Length: 289
Image (cartoon, rainbow, N blue to C red; front, side, top):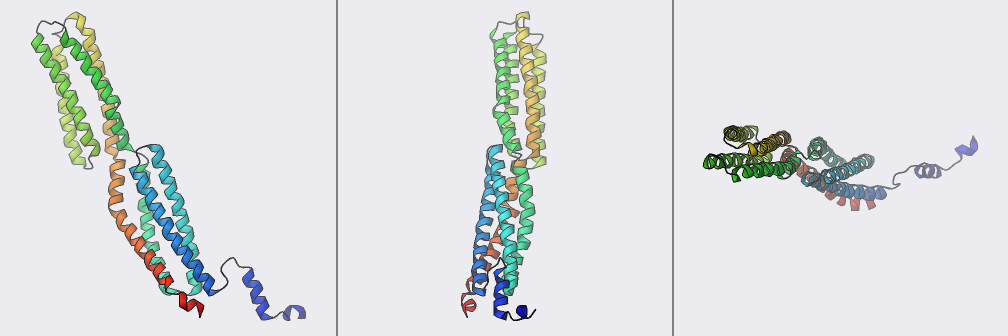
């Protein structure tokens, strides 16, 4: 027992400090605090940048990859924040601790909003609706047009009437196509409803034109008219999918949130981090005394 008691106090303190993972001196702790604060700023910037790229990405793969990148940086932010909080408490730095708490409050709200934004961004419903509109919907609309033009090109009993009805039907489908773009970009439900009312009216006009065409065409043209009707049915199926995706509005909503409340929270977080780094920079002379 005497041997243990005889160990000099300074040696015992040195042994205990050597067993800790953190910096041993006030100056070392200050340097580590500065490093953590700087890396905290870097990781937060990387997180916001990756999240913004996820919102703006034009493929599911890119959106998901950027969302994962943002999440990794967020984990680094939280890790640095926790380590820095412990150091500031150990140093007794009240001002810096309060600044870190300010950041943490803004960051908590930022984090919650960012999760919602990224969940929306990776769905890419507006982009998917746009691809359908420019792709499959365009293809079946063209097939509808081609079939009706084939009917109109053949000699019928009332040729002028047939051509007028064909033109009316084709124009109606083109009107629906033209309205899909504004619908996909629209964020307001009431405005969407107005666009849809115009689409329904145009579809009704198309159906009426086809009904009037049926008794006018010769027997040899009826199969072509059936093909046109089939193409119209396919168009309406794809059109319904486009409207469903458009109503989910994931890209429009995620972008609106990113440009709105998230910008405010980002600015608040950055302001606290800059103030924290400035405060730590002023601690240099105190730590060397």
